[in-house]
Image (cartoon, rainbow, N blue to C red; front, side, top):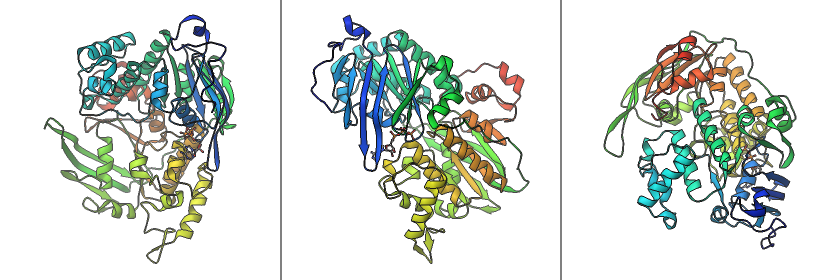
Length: 544
Ligand SMILES: Nc1ncnc2c1ncn2[C@@H]1O[C@H](COP(=O)(O)OP(=O)(O)OP(=O)(O)O)[C@@H](O)[C@H]1O
């Protein structure tokens, strides 16, 4: 890249809103190209982001969105092209360079230290700005008030729910002087009410002249909050869309060149045969203050063959621990787990998997993939002793490779080949690989935590179809998801988890995402009657 070019005709800036530069776009990307071995991630991309707007970036998995944002944030260097910020051409070698130019990024995985306060999280590492005491606290309050973020400087991060943590991350970026914020799939972990609150924050930022660039696969949300949309397909910009005159279907067509798919019609396949019976599951944990907390507080449920049981809940209410307890990754204090009539409460995870449990983990990087291993080795992961990976007790690399080729084809994993590492796949394509692998073993029970998080609308519909199809053959599914449309669309039975307990159940045929979202904040319990829930107001915040 042309690192040391002089400022462009717009003249120097750095002080947004000042002089002639105030007309300059917040960000201009011109001719950005980035190559990886076997892939052109970005190909001659042009984007203009006007100051004071919310600009969305949409595109299929692997289209090149994250790469482009990493380039703008100084995490990666483009092979070609120029970046202009507030009218001045820049060259970033690191995120620190980007921050110095007013570009900040909020990642999908929050990077806050749980055992520290908000103040410490925000100010540590930037003491030069406002110290770490009273001045920093005052600054945090000032920013929080200015943009309606409601962040309390002295709160301990571990006490905060997902939405509050996200606001802390946003505040942290503003504290460092960002005028343009990049948000990577910010709504993936939020319930509807939290999404609305986030969008109010974004509108507030924009009304103060700040600029927001965000990546999202949720087209409805994109249309509701964005002022402009850029669509990227296979590494290149295919167009911009005006949200006022574009439908989700048109946007999807622009992205993938095909129709926006919808989940298939629901027809009950639930049988009387129990596939998984969990009873009396209890798990306690001691937090940093030595206080013992009930993480799982007497969980009972049965999933029958052919049934999808969806568990709704704001993240942090015990869903992750429930999954880990059923998988044998955590030992509960008491309770039993019975799979197809066999008590597996005390058998190791590997044996549980071999007994027919498929597992789509919440954290694909920690539990789902070996990032530095090639795709075909990842195909074996967790299924070492099963066909086609193993023959007469030995790994059959040839068969595993062939089957990986099949999964790549069938699940449309976009990759230059099966010898590349899992780390080099885009997030959505990593997820497709995991889903393909788990479904390939025809599990009796699928434990699916956020099975379509980060995947594009086309791939999402395909995964939904695959799960529905397998359910028809008797598959039982324990579904955890933050995507309420997914929960409602796929589940036969819905339960709400709140503070370690299953507090409510709902009929997926009648409940709306808003009603479900409200119940997830602890506002209602028992059987969620469609009318009754609609009338009750949410309360109590999202922490759990
Ligand atoms: N470090 C890397 N090494 C090799 N290839 C990479 C690397 N990072 C990204 N790629 C490739 O670049 C392409 C674009 O990936 P990118 O992550 O930018 O896509 P994306 O649009 O953000 O996708 P998703 O919606 O799935 O997150 C993909 O083909 C991906 O495999």
